Amino acid sequence: MRVKCVICDSIHQLPDDLPLAKKLRNRPIHTYMCDSCYERIEKNTEQRLATGKFKFFRTSSKMDEEF
Image 1 (cartoon, rainbow, N blue to C red):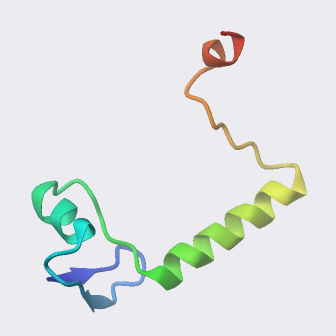
Image 2 (spheres, one colour):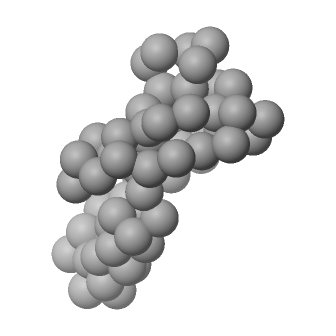
């Protein structure tokens, strides 16, 4: 299966029997991101979290924290 990264527009080949390939085929809302873009975003997010100025909301609402 040919897939295209949503960030860098590079085209990659995925084996048809991978669970990711099945997810991309059956649910068009899901998008593919190549490993290099995923690692770059992960690294930048960790750097922003380390500054202390970036708020990362892990829960959907404040009510979840109270219970």
